[in-house]
Structure formats: C-alpha cells, structure tokens
Length: 151
Image (cartoon, rainbow, N blue to C red):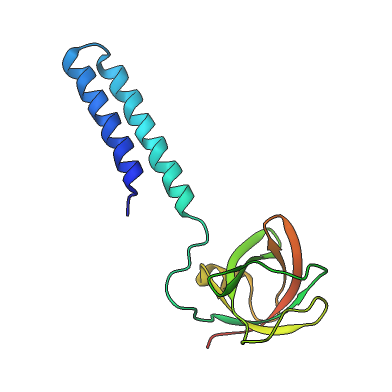
C-alpha cells in the first residue's frame, strides 16, 4: 500500500513534469529529473516500511534459551519484546512474549517462544543448537541458543 504522502509527492512531480512538457520550458530533461525524484521518493518510502513490521497475532516459530546480560530491560512494544538475533554476519528481527508475571532476569536463562519477521531466512542460519547474540538498537543485551524449531 502506497502512503498518501508518497502519492501526493508523485502527483506533484508528475504535474510539474507535464506542465513543463506542455509549456516547453524544461522539456525532456526536466521530465527525466521529475521521474528520478519520484523514484527516490518511492525507494525511501519502501525502506521506511521495511522495519520490523509484525502483523497479526503472535505465533512462535521456534523455542530459544535466552540469557540477558547486565541490562535489566528489553524494549516491550505492544505486549511483546523485540530484538535482533545475530549470528555471524546475519541478523534476524524477532519478537517474543513472556507469561504473565514472569520477568527476564539478567544472568538467568529463560526458555521463550520467538516469532521471526522472516522465519524462512532465519531457519537457514539458526538451526536447532545454533548460538546467537541479541541486540536492541546498538546494544548487545543477551545471548542465547535455539532449542527447537516448529510448534
């Protein structure tokens, strides 16, 4: 779905390009520049939407054993914790939930179900038994191991 701001910017670029073609003020060069600008706007819009966008209810793809380091908090958004599991040079966006009243204590391993933003890619790089580090923003907040895949 294209955002209204992108549609507005594309409409302005197209109108300006058409006006310059009709009035012969800028000709084809301006039209090319307008199209280039519209392409850049679309690219920026797509990149902005590529963030961690989990849709629908939480569905665990895998069980992991997660141990937080020193930081006592991991960001909680919409009743789920979010982070990035990193292994080698690959990072995978995840979210997970905890049972009511259960907290993540630094240094204490906790088994949790996680949902990956792109589970098919994560499964290829994080098989059962694989170890990973967990990032929150630029901060390393934990370590873990994939216990098992599947429901």
